[in-house]
Image (cartoon, rainbow, N blue to C red; front, top):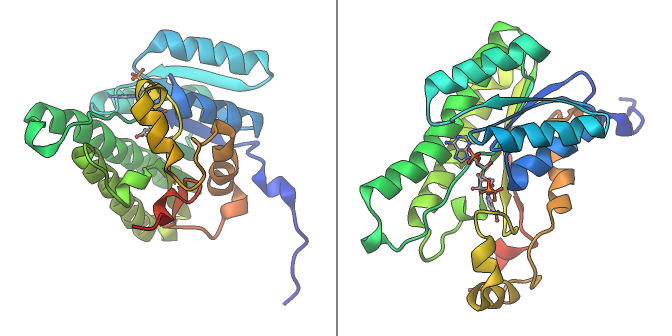
Amino acid sequence: MENKQLDLTNFNLTGKVALVTGASSGFGEHFAHVLATAGAKVIVGARREDRLKNLVADITAKGGEALAVAMDVTDAGSVAAAFDQAEAAFGTITVLVNNAGVAAPKTVHKTTEADWDFVVDTNLKGAWLVAAEAARRMVSANTPGVIVNIASVLGLATSTGHGIYSASKAGVIQLTKHMALELANKNIRSNAICPGYFKTEMNGEYFDSEAGKAYIESTPTGRLGLMEEMDGPLLLLASDAGSFINGAIIPVDGGHLVMSI
Ligand SMILES: NC(=O)c1ccc[n+]([C@@H]2O[C@H](COP(=O)([O-])OP(=O)(O)OC[C@H]3O[C@@H](n4cnc5c(N)ncnc54)[C@H](OP(=O)(O)O)[C@@H]3O)[C@@H](O)[C@H]2O)c1
């Protein structure tokens, strides 16, 4: 069999329509810039619309194309309405970055049912609602597609105070594998990235504290991840460069998960 030449344009996303959930801050905001720079038309979804509008203005100023849609991932009606709005503007979404997420760090005996509902409804039910909506629409449009779920190293390991969060992200990992299995024959790939620790609004206060700094120093690299260290994994999974990667769970954590016990 003759090998095809290496083609770096496979990483290019021109012609793709991408949705990033949780795009009003942190990873989601960064991912929206990365996907737009790679050529995709990008729909940015979250609840804080003012933030999304600023992001769209930034992307547009840099020559990209983007649209803000208000979206609460815990609400099926809100998710469907956001997809309708996105489709009317840019056509079928072919790249989903399922990124919206929350945390409520507490030890097990202090957590409440409300904490469970908050975290699981957003991280797991929300991820499922958005992925299922995306998959339905890709299938009915008969188009190939890609789903990138943002799980966490805490979906593969756990840590004191993060029980519900860990459980929700473990659920996202299983959901990823299940979608990969069921959608492969529709030419839709599903993979998950498990980030280690990166400073965002979710955890900034902790990582600025003495306890947070000491914890990070105890990890193999002794530092937090940098946003741009997510770009390669994201583009690999979102683009045709990853065309045979399906059901993969990829830690991006500087080796945090392989620490010795
Ligand atoms: N930072 C890390 O170290 C780390 C590590 C592993 C995994 N992660 C995961 O990475 C993802 C992004 O987190 P981040 O660190 O970037 O934190 P972040 O800055 O707090 O961003 C979270 C995003 O989720 C959105 N969101 C929350 N609830 C939502 C809802 N009901 N509907 C729609 N959007 C909602 C928020 O937007 P609105 O409030 O405007 O709706 C916000 O844009 C999360 O899934 C998180 O679990 C983060």
